[in-house]
Length: 292
Image 1 (cartoon, rainbow, N blue to C red):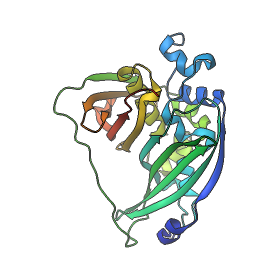
Image 2: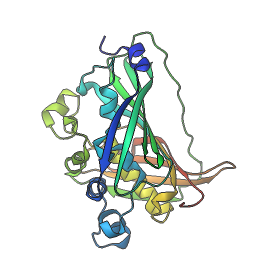
Image 3: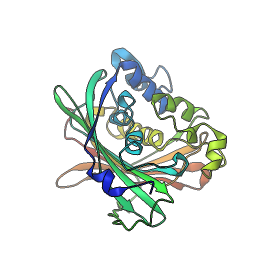
């Protein structure tokens, strides 16, 4: 079988050395739509090296260490890229990401779930530098046509949005060339650039990377709710519920929630051009009490 769940989950952890420079952070930020307007002080913290702060979602591409690619190279896993979709993503931040760094990423496959007509590969990547842990990425990779092997179906969790109106609603236009720019950060899947490959995957044109939408959304939350303070993001999780085509507009709704043990922002992302078709669901940004 293309997926050997037992082999994948029992394999030894794989380690990869990561390195990044300010220009990698700047390129990532541009890839998720930062820099508009170019001279806005709020945008310069994403684009100008002398003021640079790092959005925690950069962890998904730091050093070219794509979590998605790492999962597909795990022992026991051999799948067709045309059958692969990103199912969900969580980044947990242990301390603010530096603008320049060298680190070691350790990757494992904690589980492979059987969804019937599809398989879900769960990948965990833990990244640390000489000063200790930096971030943990949990990635769910959805592989069509690879289910039915008799494995566990896995958990199903949903976040219920508040019944009140959102505290913030913003729209973010996706440029026609957004996917072409974003892929320069390391995700070279032709699904996002090659019309012929996209057609083989069942789409009439290339789609935007789910992780690009993921970054666009976190930037919107940081800018609108946290006053641009990227250090207050403690964790960020989402489920990819639909596709985005370059040229569309994202509608991002946010609800700030104060709970006894934590503060967080619940988020809904829809396609404004397609009658609010769901794009990101079960999405939450956990907020740390201070930017330390």
